[in-house]
View 1 (spheres, helix red, strand yellow):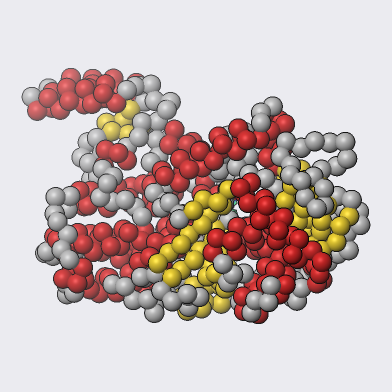
View 2 (view 1 turned 180 degrees about the vertical axis):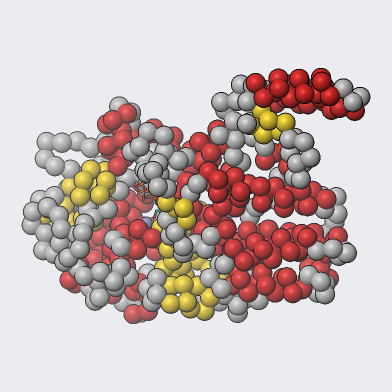
Length: 487
Ligand SMILES: Nc1ncnc2c1ncn2[C@@H]1O[C@H](COP(=O)(O)OP(=O)(O)OP(=O)(O)O)[C@@H](O)[C@H]1O
Ligand SMILES: [Zn+2]
């Protein structure tokens, strides 16, 4: 099942599908831009990590030794990606009247809880930006003589000093929205701060001494430094949401070019990563994705409304990562039902022991399904088709159950739906607002079953009405075996 030659990925740098060729034989080194921990992540943010997780699982599945790094941005990300505005962390700390360190700790924990709930694997390392400030200063000192200039507000990177600035974004350097901004003394509109000085007379909560005065590193510098330090230039794959293709990643690439040239590294090394991959956005029409709106779409909100988080993972997998995905509650409910169908079949395999890979994968009934799966996932992570292959395996009749279990396990190791550890009952969460406890529902339903068995339909109907009055609908003969839902 591990056919390492069979993986193509869409490289945003070339806008083409390319066969994956690792920098180091048998290894895959991946860096994913992590969250800015100034607030809870919304489910759109989490789509970026589901995507990176599927990429990592696929690389492992194809036989590569994976080293995955995700960072935590706890300093330096401004309210405007185009290098203007206030530090998001400083701003939240001011509004909440709390220390930045407390804010960062709280929202990092909240993010990790979402990571766990979505069955996203732990990376080899979570790199915390504030742990790398000395390395950032060192990196900046190295590239400063040939690529940077100092003005009152900080040390700026001169984008005209590197070849082909912005080729990832395919942007015109000095034009376009978001690129014109008002820092006095900048040489080019696209130049960006790699070190922001604390203005005279002010004191920031997070600041460090540097050759350019007290201040804080720029967000783009952080990712260049952490990825290069932990994975070595060049490494294989750098991921992030599609918005990063426009500013953050072009700026990282410019810094990496400067660093690699300064350090005599090869030309192919100079983008830092060979492949840059971007997930498209999760969108929502009424704007609830934005953290500035009151009730924004957090994973916890989905859970509070009774949707198991793996239903959201399923929703992500149903779309290709490069397509925009529109969020709707109906779509989420449908994804959850689909997951439940799979789990019902998986429960039947619960006590079956999986046979050894080669015996299972050679099974004549399952082999074509496996081939479809391998091809789909190997073609730029086509999870939508991979899911249908998994469903075919689950539905296959007259197949040795141990072979079936082995194949389902192998496929689920890539998709991460956690089919063998999640039960049907786990999936049914009681919404926070429900006026009745589950035990009470179960009790009424048991009495109702008894009444029906005794053909006492008057009592049975009365009990059904009693539940309905509390917002619960009894479901007779539901094909998925759900006995009730909220009406
Ligand atoms: N709606 C979305 N759908 C998918 N990915 C997204 C979406 N919004 C942001 N992302 C990605 O989420 C990841 C985390 O982003 P980050 O924590 O920096 O938040 P952000 O981009 O500042 O979002 P926000 O402005 O809403 O706080 C990044 O890879 C980003 O590209
Ligand atoms: Zn980044």
